[in-house]
Image (tube, rainbow, N blue to C red; front, side, top):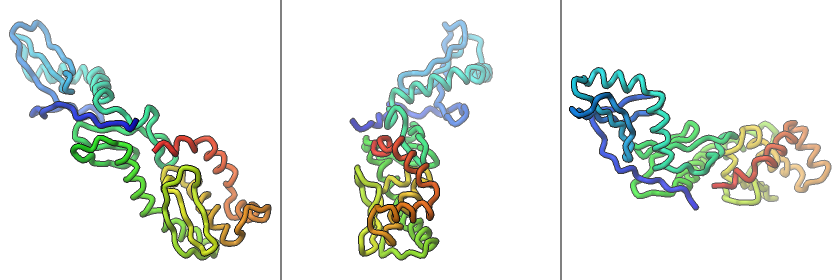
Length: 238
């Protein structure tokens, strides 16, 4: 099931409190019958502060400051309820699993990326996948050109594909096809797959000579293969 972006039912109050990277809406309410300051997070994700008889807004703010660790923890629980993560363990980005967080502003964040979620768009997976594909379109052809030039190889063109079982291929005419998911890998694994295909410009097979050429050009071949064996399933989650 694709993760869905639940739209919190909230009207932004005029005040907020900032705790680390969280900006939490807050409402102060005076209740003469109250005997003490009370802080709670409502079902709509607002920090509601009760000011008792004889209390002041300034002291209420100090009270919130003292309760900030508790408030931050409760608000993260609120976000977890209304905005389910793409997966329990996040998504792969640049070789690491990173969480996908969505603020009340409707902006999804993962790694160093921010992604505005369009109104009515409830499929986070599709939005994140499209962002990664855009990144692949910008980054991978130029990286192929860099590595090909380093090895003195020619490439006719680079195409990007969405395949489940292959990371790349090289045609006899010099067309390099790459899986867009290379942008989810560490740089050295991305470069390994690119080099794997580029070496086919010298040897169009997987003979012993081919592997010798590849390991000479890319000494981290074994480490990259090991990383792929450990993480291939996670890379195919999107």
